Image 1 (spheres, rainbow, N blue to C red):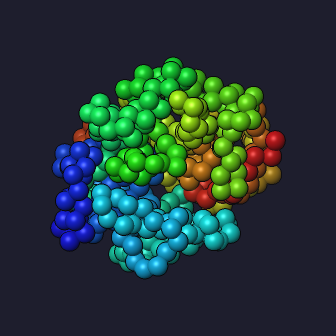
Image 2: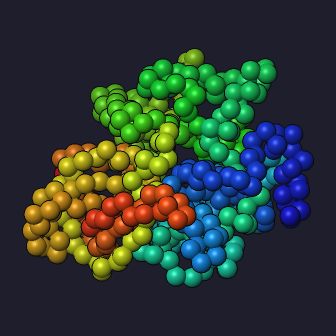
Length: 368
């Protein structure tokens, strides 16, 4: 254990928010993990592979917060459990062209931990696979929100405001407050004056589809609720008034039953880069990471196909952006995906299908 982790442990809130990594198996999207080196890592998606030879599990992730390394702008600083951290992505976002973001972010990851270098699949070329054995603990989203609710019930006014905001959002969207979780730096105990609330909404497949559709309808008809950040409009982020104060909600989505995720356990066979044209005919899984869309009216490298094909967006930057009827085109990796169900000796192939897969925003674009 490092000196940095020992410093974090001295904060009175640390034990309320941290969940031990021992025995933790429900790896999901949008969750923070604390490494032994004191860095905070953010899970990307709900697939996190197990090495079949060693049994070691890896977290598909981004490194977000590291102890402050020098002079940085105030907007990149964050106090986490009493210690000053820097958000390594903020400076890149604010100072560099969007097309360089993924590349520069990966360079920062490898400066922090050169052992993470090595070959990665196409869909994860800007992600890092971090051994779960290197983590001290994690901050499950529902666990963190329960900690905030407990603080609010105990008289903490700032935590009470967040609890009230969740109740207002839950009422609007028809989801029980108990099905909410908290992501972002708020899930790390930094709830005093948040810029926004990164919430995780849990539901059935049908419930998530309903909520996503209703959020898109809300932001389509009410301009005052629309969120514009980092040069784009986010159709499922929205502004809410809570006791007269504006609160920005940035929702992630998760399923109550994680085994219902379509890409919970999979392998990908890469066939080569291909040009794609098609139309979204099923957007049921448009708000998850990875985003999974079914396309019809498909052309691959200019050749018309009679069969539908799937499109997988593995970057999380366009969750909720695509709807049935949207036309898409671009160039990305043509693959065969095989999904599996069960664990250990019970693990068996469940499905096999072709898909175009991208891990980079901009390779596939909506054209209508």
